[in-house]
Amino acid sequence: MGLINTSLLSTSLLSTCLLSTSLSWAEDDLYQIEIIAFTQTPSSMDAREVWPNDIALAYPPGTMVLKTAEALEAEAATTDTTMGELSSAIAPSHSEAKSIEGETIEAESTGDETSTLPPAYALLSPDVFTLTNTAAHIRRNNRYRLLAHNAWRQPLTNKSQAASIVVTGGDAFGNHHELEGTITLWASRYVHAKANLWLTEFYPNYGQDQEFSIWPDLPTLPTEQKAPFGNTMMEVSDNKDATLWDQDINRGFNSGFSTFGSLGESGYLVSRVVLMEESRRMRSGEVHYIDHPLFGIVVRVVPVDELDEA
Image (cartoon, rainbow, N blue to C red):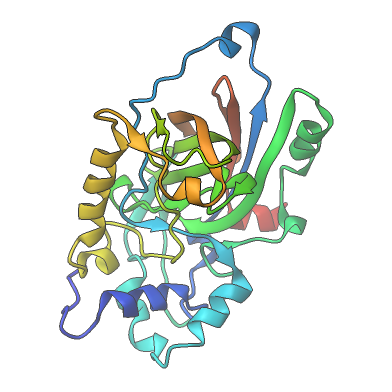
């Protein structure tokens, strides 16, 4: 797919196009992603663990923020752009064969069909969740505490084009949450999931702003839904996201001490940050658990057309 002339389309316009529910996807291109995040009581050995503080915390280029379908519709309504003129340039090519789990699927789309599916990258209603029993088990077990339970639908691209989805959960402390980070999913022969999540412990700020922290600054949470990095939408940009990613990574590693900064101003300070960076290869439909001594996530990826058949 060739690049769009940057003199005709701006990055902001393309981001708005992604928000529009007029941009439809063929049902056999979409997968339903469902995740559950939770904390767990550490073992006596894990409780004594000294967690490293030379960790990098940053949101990668192409990070996407999930919003409700209503919020996406409201944002899309603010533009006068004719979506039909741009959908073929923005949507992934459906003429290429995809091979997942050894089976070749030829996906075709005319770009004219009207989808009744929820828009891609929109948060789904709990009535379509498939891991409700798992979440209920976590709530009943005193060893665990549920942080988040979300689901959405998206196409699975190759790794270079995969969008990183923002994940937050737990209690809010100022502009941050206990759990923050991203999960990235893509498809080759199998479905792959990569978790880049951090769990933060906060404590009240009683005027200790002058003190220093051994922990890295928490990166600012993205608020806008952006296009997947690596596809046409991101290629027309000036790659500012990639530059910011490099800067965030460099800031994330502590070269010494850093001040609490805005967290102190918000009334909370950081007492600990633990990072989970794990990847899993999975088959669609299977339930996978990504582990850490202090927290974990449950992930399930199912083709939407298989959900409809159930």
